[in-house]
Length: 411
Image 1 (tube, rainbow, N blue to C red):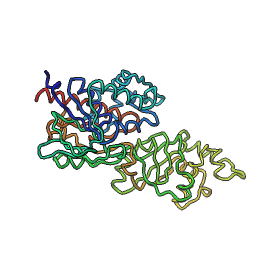
Image 2 (tube, one colour; image 1 turned 30 degrees about the vertical axis):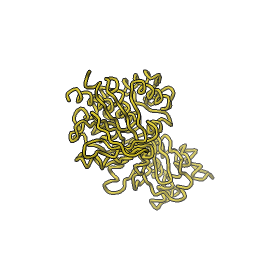
Image 3 (cartoon, one colour; image 1 turned 30 degrees about the horizontal axis):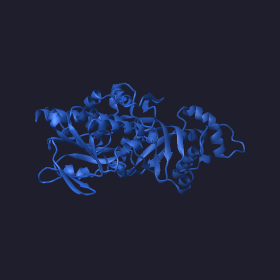
């Protein structure tokens, strides 16, 4: 009988990384139990699929890997071993065909996460993987047993190996609350501070603008910050601004705000028009139209875009009506917004920071705690939305599972 077949492996965390590790382990004959504090598996995965489950992205792999920025060298081997094409094949083997959307993003044809999760859990059950829900991991005892709080009291377990896949600290009500940080730090594991990623930012809107435009989208815009330029859309919130284009710049904006405490973001309201064309358009006679009606018709600006211009003019002590056509054109394509803070991590889509890669060997095992592996959003990486978050979670979960099998074969 092989070491793997005799091994009893514990996976803590029933999200994509943990369930993928469990599948890899069970395929090789290990006895696997997945523990999770929540009453059901994959809660954040289901939330991610509410507006359409963006599994991965179809762009060329070198471009795809570059999205992981500084973490790319540490994630490259895992993603190459379980690439976007592999994730699509895996989904289709579960009966969930995929398609590529107009943006290059990959979705299941069913669009939602629930059919895929149900099929996955059925497969894991058929492989003998056990789920132990409402089990909150609280660390180790003096005998190095894993300790869990459960509805029927404390439990202590000493498995052959452990995969930690507890997520970051965003959307804590779905299970990833970052409580593991202190537990691992007490073992000497170096952990980069958990911070919001793919998040919104605070803006001190005027009461008039906030009350009228909260929840309104700014469509077809470009955002500019330093050397970074992103096209897309953003949404005005009561406390600031969020949305896809904002998330794409969130790492740079967060770092900038961390230093001086604020950052100036510039919004291009008509990125398809250059300044000369805009100047010609806003130089046309207004007649008896209000300025808002004129801008709506002449430049095709939405009410929220016009409100944003008025907000910027008010902050500078000027009025839109008093601006020359050239100055108005410049403002339309470079509206400054002062970001005064980062939205709370509990509201962020994902988490930056986590276990430093220097604390892991090439098989994702903790150097300081032998037999304990880590995967997913617990690790110190971040990526934009677009399928990159799930892809790295699946890929590192698979890599940690393979790492456990390798370690057990040597033990």
